[in-house]
Image (cartoon, rainbow, N blue to C red; front, side):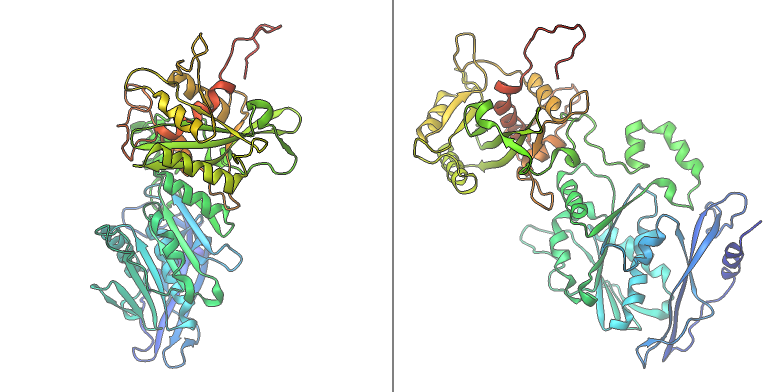
Length: 536
């Protein structure tokens, strides 16, 4: 038995869609049928695709009076759209929803055609009462932009608008303009391609590839009615720390709502297709491509790291700073000396509650292509300015710096590194000692990585190692977060094999963290009264 809305949907397929009057009255009415897949009672509204059943409908737009500049009723032959039950509230974007919507979805889930394009035209109809006004649509490449443009054109009657293919500008009869721009820069000298426009709303397709333009896009909303700059952005899973940071920032702001659209969210794709993919994909590929899950690198070096759980503000209330008790100084630095990159991290210990010792990374310094002395002086200056540490007076709080153990070969740290830090007033020590107590010990890379993973999250699900952040969730050590999030082992299961000194090499920040923590957090053999106890 078909529902009344399904019967109406079938009749709507046979109705014409005409202009009320080409000079003054334009029928810009739209009826959106909310559909779900139904092999038994459904209607094949798209030839060859899965049949669907209508479960609700929504009317938007109306008959636009070009002379009065307002809607004067609703037409009897509305333009028909179809939306999934997972996307309809995003398309309508009611006033009680956040101003920003993030449609994070699988490939083929209908993010662009079934969500973004309908949102664009729905906002154009909504903004008509504020015309003349312009809204923006961006995509990372011109080819991707063309797909969005085509989807928008298919939703509107040709009599509603004029389209300039050269400028990629829609001009509706209501004097609402839709400007479509590809954000990719053709050269480093070229500035942002979206600067200079004033928009009332914005839609961004595949925003994970436009992360560097998000601030510029947000600055375009000066024309938004009432200051409410509505935005929608579609995204697909991508192994990019910059994108992950932007996603976290948007959600933490409280101004964005994320909606995950799995492959099955698209009602027009047979469910059997998604089931068949399970047999041709690995579990990880299926989870990332079809289920739209945010996963780390396939061979992640630090699988215990979670941006959601390990990036959090320092506990300023209800906790005690116990760095002096654990380290013997008021601050702990980890330093990784490099031929072209020097990295230093500041860590502090806190007692949270009565027993839990938490470790927070509180700052990060990275210098490239400068002398080590310049790096050390910058660290000392900013320790004083930002953390009130390392002043020259003997009674003032000092910090200890832990460094890669020295050696005699060209590949090992030279004693001059220690001398530079000591000459600047720091207490410089090796992260590991040999049996004679000399700073010529060895920190095996995999042992250090295992230590960090255990501190990030141990076998009991306990986390002790965190990166401090601001009130918007931005980490104070972004390169360390990138290293923990994106580092991956090679095909031989070896970690940190990238070319040293290259901009893709992420080993410096993780190494500085290991050097700082190794003397205090490496596992030691202890006697247990009960067998089977696991030291965590």
